[in-house]
Image (cartoon, rainbow, N blue to C red; front, side):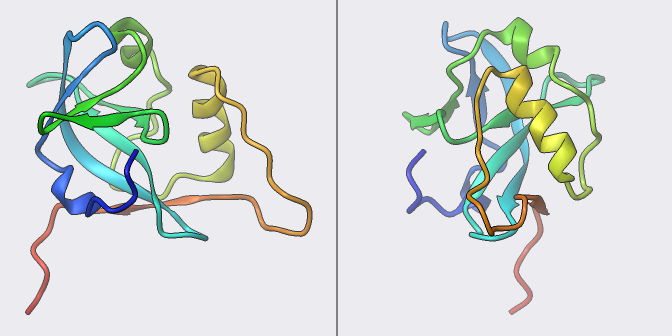
Length: 124
């Protein structure tokens, strides 16, 4: 994922799986607490469905849409932690395992956690 993209610009974009099948729309973006880098996106999978968390690191922004390199079925089966809340290190670990991604915390550094970036207007 390109790090020069403002995470607020991801909100509202369509999301597609690796086969080009539409998953839904980016509802929220979660930032890494330590680095501030966008780490997770919550994808609204349907009008009456829940949001599914997807990792942003292996994902790409292609033609204005988020392309997630996983199958739609795997994404829809992701653990449901609800949106609008902080992801704990344990929840993130569950998500990484679900997607078959491995993460190592370097010695001496705290475990990574993510905060949400709500789709709100900046007060100016």
